[in-house]
Image (cartoon, rainbow, N blue to C red):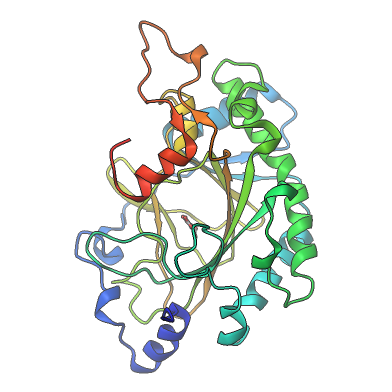
Length: 335
Ligand SMILES: O=C(O)CCC(=O)C(=O)O
């Protein structure tokens, strides 16, 4: 059975100026009702080129404890590498329907990879205003090129180039996160599997929506993986939950957005917080984003780092294989 894509629903909805009922969120979730409109506290912006490593580690550690999310500037990835990544992703989503469907996630497949429309079943049976494409980009042994678009022809080169640069940024982030826990720089990266850490690219495509006050793009969630590094386009839409409010994250040209995921919260024994976030959609413009989820391999056991556990500070989380953590989370089972 063919899944209806939000991109197709959106083109019909724009003409009728309404959206189907299953996209209308309950009042508890509607962005018009639940977005905070007072003075918005600044989400931290961190200069990754700061040569003072202690200061950098402190800034990243503070942001990870207080927000679980921050933006990084001067990260070293050339802006043309990012523009090419965005341009080939946009070109893919602008291909005719049949051409995109050739990359659809096979029905019933265990893999998350492929073009698709919905990841999780939602409690109230509501749908999210977003389509996506998932594929791994690193390490080479994890890549299945079947899910990498052949059109545009530069898709592969653009993604390989981005992956190469991104690895440097991720290593730097792990070093600072580790130092911020009072540990040696290599500890966290080793704990997440070292060079076996898998980089899962997702492209989110949020078409224009006639009722952005009622619908959501991605619903509220925390990321299961270690950290997520996200490239947004210029259409703002990311919201962060903090102190019982939903705050808009502002768009900063050339910045990358870093999310602390569940596994870093667990490894840090709760010192760092995995961030609850969601996305809104735009009436006139297409929003896109390119998060890369840095995932431990499925068999790796993740739990609080022994260095951070003591009699006064007992383990707050169970140690378990990453694949078991994912299974429980996707099936809404206790961890
Ligand atoms: O599009 C965004 O800014 C966030 C996307 C996201 O949270 C996700 O894909 O899990």
